[in-house]
Length: 208
Length: 253
View 1 (cartoon, rainbow over the protein chains, first blue to last red):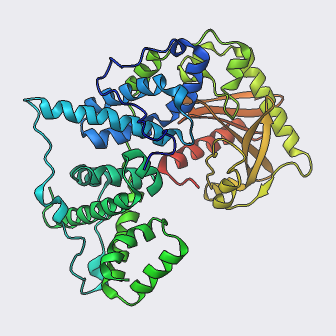
View 2 (tube, each protein chain N blue to C red; view 1 turned 180 degrees about the vertical axis):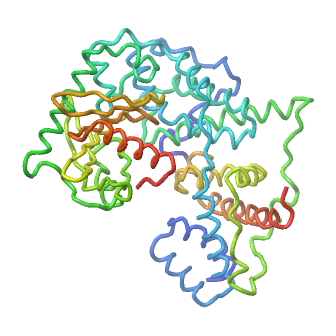
View 3 (cartoon, rainbow over the protein chains, first blue to last red; view 1 turned 45 degrees about the vertical axis):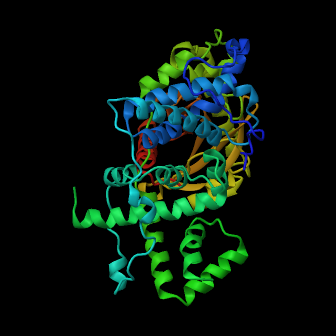
């Protein structure tokens, strides 16, 4: 289903080769008033965009590059932005930038391809019913441990999880950002939480 | 409803994404199924644990500077553009965004805004003008601003620290709406004015005195703050410090 802010059949950013867009650089890019409007609308979301990039790419330097590219593309396409929400629009652009980075990594001989573990889809959603209510108590991990557990989730579960739990997007907004039906978002999220919960409990038995 | 259906839908229930009919169906299933009930409880707890941990990252200042530098630079600001940085609404200053804020703001403009803030404080002290929403509960005051301003001002309860939250008010500075949060210390009223700015650079507090009122001004996380009161400067500084501490430790409504 097409995103609400994207005309049907048209992705916000199609160019995957950073720096050389198929579109001519719009002369309006030099308009300071337009740049000011863009700054006002887009820069307050910088931390959010950077956070998503960190989780998608799992590398601080790559995340910085992706965010910068994201803002360049967003400025270029700012005239076609029709709302309603700036943050999901930026996320959708960032996601396209990151997909290009995945492709680069996949073709790089030095960087290993990220393999989706075979068993990712087989992780049971169900856990054995606890014998006592106490068994339900989850250890309260610190933020850095949770970050590590989240980063260990396979794509696209990690992406869905981060958009929901950290950025607090609605299912509809997530569906628009990742270009998948709401039902898919729902099942990915259920799977992501099940995998995180397994890892969460395993951490308790075998802390790293 | 089967357990297979419930295992997916209970997540949508946690997230508040189900319509009333589906929510009822899931709840009915869970009421009669201990295993699903236990699952729901476990995931609720995990969501809570996740939400209470800070899993966000902050963009490095160098990245922010690089992005700002890559945008077309605005012309030298006129007075109006500078003032926009202080006011709420769509007109947030490009200058503030470009990080030049502290350098280019001329002293007379800054003083003029402070003088307007003091005028707003004085107006608020007239009978019946102090608060639009009266509440000592930060969770009542903060939602009240929703829809009235482009930015929801942070509302912090500092009662335990000796500054009683008494409400909020919509005010005007430079003919633009601005949020004011009202505190009381003994018989003294403190108006805390909050305005959005595109610059997220932190500016340490400084205290000025205008017409016998003390003003503590600081900037943090994209917001400009002016705390105005007839309190002594050291007590106003204490208020500001406690507010900033509460913001950093996350006890914000």
